[in-house]
Length: 458
Image (cartoon, rainbow, N blue to C red; front, side):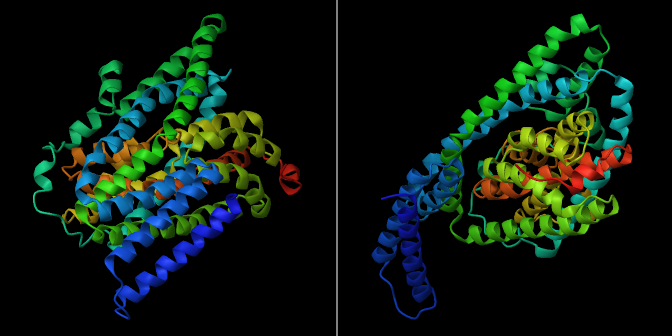
């Protein structure tokens, strides 16, 4: 058997399973429980067989989700023992954040020869970044309020009793939290924004010293960044276990009813991201006279890489190469894209605003739009710099939920479908940042229209 035959076999089994469930759920005929159970597990085995031939991490993650659902349905008591696997995955993700943020930000800032040139491009980039991400934030809030995807989740008795107490923070504490008190302490607690602030100041200071003294630290940071990218790739091999275990725990504890709300959340996110692309980024490209058809050709490969790996950083080398071929000068590409991975997370910002309100809706809490906006702005600030870390936005969401007194169990439910959501939001992050490089190049008067018109992908 090969990959094609295994895929066809899985489709046939799925079709049979779908027909059986359609007959059973519509009360056309009563299907024996054991028949459904057997059909489900034959389908899982067929998917596992396909994943073996496919040899794709993304395929294994998606298959693990199906396996997790079946374990949660058929072995609800046993599924709760798998929680340790999802917790291991979250802990591994947390270990990446501080070193990768520090290394990439320092290299991005100190690696430029002229701070004046960096400053000029910097304020233009940041202005564009913050306007676009704020719009993404608002679209996310509007989408989740329209669909109400988190409303109506039935919480089993006693679930909230298992959650730790959380202390809400005042607005003064939220602002004070931005600034690092102790870098090592921020790393220990996984506080993202203080790490970002420290790294930016460190990068500026490093850029101001003589080249001979700057080079050793710059080389160290470049090596550290490369190591952490490889570290991320290693951790991703554990993702199928973490994601599969998370959805097994969710289904086993909450039942299948929660999947309806999660699917609604997933569709809400995809619809909101499509609206953002068509209503915001497309008009920006047209206003800035960017050849849209060739731009799509230029970003299709890096976006595909980002979608498959759920990591913006994995798409960075190809994105930088294609943007230079597309007519954006190298000095602008090398500054805007890495900086955008810290400050221009369009897809992540939209997701975080949407997911935070979903958590509140699932908990039965009513938040005014002003409260939602403030929470979204807090998320937008604390999420800066996590684009290179697959699913690190979940860690950000957990921290902000604790700050605003929201329960944590809906976030663990989200983890079950986070792989599918991460594919979409990471792709939008890459599209947003590549377009930002074109916008800044046009703004600087250095965009090469001839290269853009004649761009041919490799």
